Length: 213
Image (cartoon, rainbow, N blue to C red; front, side, top):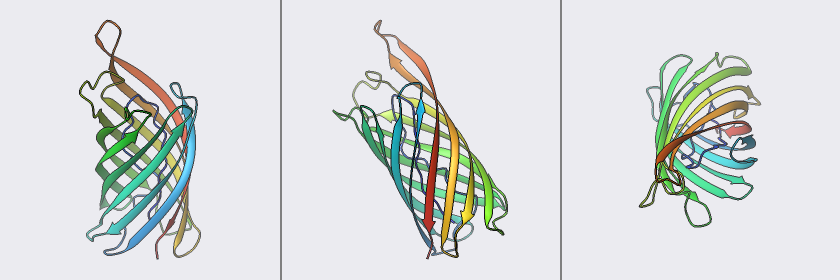
């Protein structure tokens, strides 16, 4: 019961992909799921953003799974991509904890390159029926990969609350639809060589389809 990810981040330093489009369910041991999705959004820094993403997940037993997430985001004047390792643990029915490190790259001169990661929690209703409602809260951090990390926008922290619906199309297919908000805090150096913090707000919408043979 996996999903894909598309996320818009309105921050100077973009975090690695941290995927929300999923319920709290985990895959059985050695079960594999493949996902693809797309979406878009806007915020008070970038005019708009669209993107696509892919995900591979493998169940490792004991209500756990691991995988790899990737995405590409395109705004009016910039394109960035990212990849992230992912870990998920379901400590109890309807609740999951997620985390993973990652890397973002892009920009005309590579100024978007950054290391980071995320942690979060997902809650969802029972997966017994055709539809399941879920909510999530994730925190991500990104650190630029350059000598002067504050030159073009420094360390960035982002908080993402999301709400979505997962609908089972068949034994092996599941459709996800989600809307969420994004709040970011980024540190950068101003013209007086002082490091200031700047906030940004945005929202996004996305759809995803997962295939679990």
